Amino acid sequence: MAVLKIRFEGDPILRQKANKVPKVDASVQKLADDMWETMLDADGVGLAAPQIGLARRLIVVRVPQGYDGDDDPEYTFRLANPEIVKSFGEQSGIEGCLSIPGWIGEVPRAESVTVKAQDMTGRQIRIKASGRLAVVLQHEIDHLDGILY
Image (tube, rainbow, N blue to C red):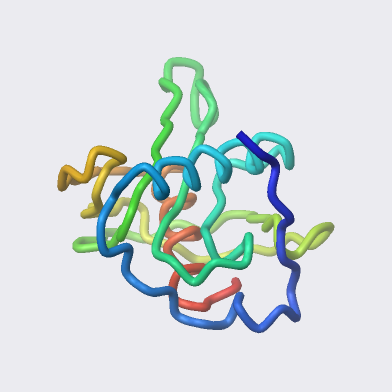
């Protein structure tokens, strides 16, 4: 695995809509592994392919155990072509972004979301998320649509 260079605000790729991953294969799996290593190295909880300079619909997410509460499990995902298919409620919280270091802001989000995506075997999955996991998924999917908060 490799630590990749994170792109910062002002890089045009961060404002572009990412292209669908046509097939989850070994190259996509390796890219997801490299993105995972990059996210951990940067002490992040999520990373989208545009943030490392690739206009592909690929994200990695790691919400640590106990992030929202003492009994919360750790959530880890490597997702191709994620898409929010349902959202409910409202929440607002402080967010940071690896592509805008040192800046934080309060961002309104849905309280819960259902995300349709492909896992790293290419299998279609659905994730029902609430709380911090819902926030992280929405933030990373925004990156795939060229949106910085």
